[in-house]
Amino acid sequence: MRTDVTFPSSGLALAGILFTPDEPGPHPLPAIVVSHPGGGVKEQSPTTYGERLARAGFAVLAFDAARQGASEGEPRGEEDPFQRAEDVRAAVSHLTTRPEIDPERIGALGICASGGYVPYAAQTDRRIKAVATVSAADFGRVIREGVDGTQPPEVLDAVLARAGELRTAEARGEPPHREPWVPDEWRDSAHRQDRETWEFYRTARGAHPRAGGTRLPRDLDRIALYDSFALIRLLAPRPLLMIAGSAADTAHLSREAVAAATGPAELRTVDSATHVDLYDRDEHVTTAVAELTRFFTAHLAAAG
Picture (spheres, rainbow, N blue to C red):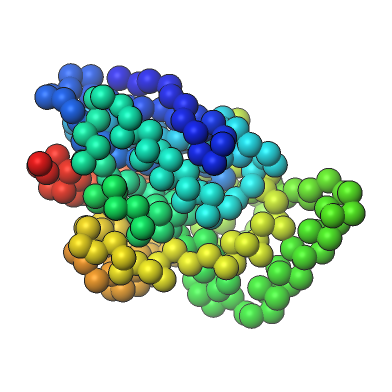
């Protein structure tokens, strides 16, 4: 069953979808918050995972981040890691108010950039009892070092200089400068992930009218300060599951985060899958959902 919901985060109304089993077992239900990739919306990969996890017996809340998708807030498309983490906490708060949900059995799942935001929020939100990620990316580290960690230092220098120039321009009355999350037309890139991202957001495969719009490059100076996993030890003793494709350019981020965790942490690799394959490719999503179901059943559904 699917129910549209709204809930507040920092004074803004966030739009969400609550998925529940068509034939739920005894109430109250264990629940999972699902947060979308950067530039994405709840109707894409969060719905793909949400529908399947609901069939496995969980209530699942997918939602649009503040200032994105169908949620409130200006300027549109702003990507603020700290607000994104607050949105995750707000989604947990909403679930605790619902009579069909057991507030002691709430987990969280982050996909892509939210694979960084969700663990970051959970480090200090002890209401989140189990944490999982799919194709996790630490957006701050990606800005600082590049997807594969080989970005020359002068690239970040240029990004930060431009962010400052754009902030100065706004202070002088110019409208915020915007750039597309994903170009409308394919442009050659040395990174396979760039092409895959374009294919997902700009073709019938995954396109959605509210996804992959414009972003504010002046946000990059704030994002560069953010570190998803610097305090990952605070998750302990709560469990962590990170799922990555064996062919994903971002897989090293999950490996390193699991290695740094001090509590129970596991890495599951999906053979032959790339970063974006795990958004929607059925054969790879099926594998990932099986791992997620196992993990959340062990750590939420059986809890007292």
